Length: 159
Image (tube, rainbow, N blue to C red; front, side, top):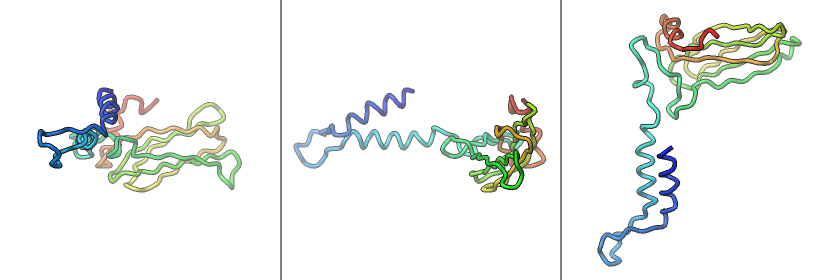
């Protein structure tokens, strides 16, 4: 919050000039350029990269370098089977993700499964007699043999 407030105040200074004491000899610098430089420098610290988020079990946060989710999800109704929903999950990151996928059923229960998703790949999960609702949990797992270890570290994995 402080950074956002600071940037907001700093942008108002874009046209303010600093004078270094030399009379019009070209030593003027806009504060906006300084604010932009500081913001760009600090933005690298806003989100951890993959290497710094991997733990001893090869688990990582499944966040993109910008801090968003590595997974993008969409759903659609099957063209061939009435009442069947197909949810598709794409891993937009450069490392493997372990994904728990659930589609709602008309009966009120969820149809769930889990699978590893390779970098820049898509995984589908389909359910018949579906409500159209879907949800997922994701954790980065570099070694597939550690899927259950890493998913155990996610508080709502089995909800």
